[in-house]
Image 1: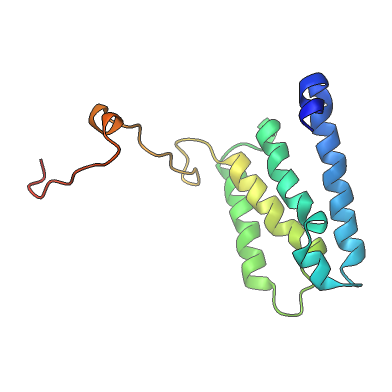
Image 2 (image 1 turned 45 degrees about the horizontal axis):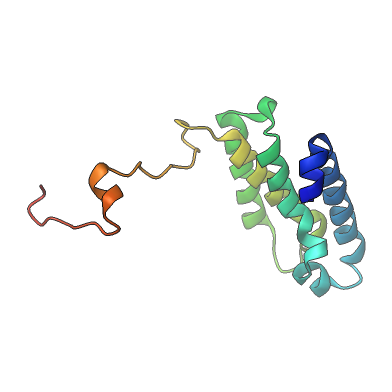
Length: 139
């Protein structure tokens, strides 16, 4: 993959998309045969990681905004509330929470209610010292 990134950068996203599709198809195909394999073995779950990699490499500008971020959170909540012990998971059932996470990450931008909060920049005193002191007087 590093060689592909170095010499054929334009091919990285299509290659990752094909790998994600193959992994997803394999998870759907193999789930009825051996659910434990599909749950625990990486080749069947790799597509979930690749969705995140694709968003990191090529954010979908058309899917930015609070509406998409909250739609993503809704997909995750729906999976939490509707899936039970009879739900064959991961396979096709993993699509809703995975796409939900992708929409929430891609859709949330700084300043939005669903946006992740970024850590504060280090102050000049904390940048010099690896530890911080706490004042009981509030100063």
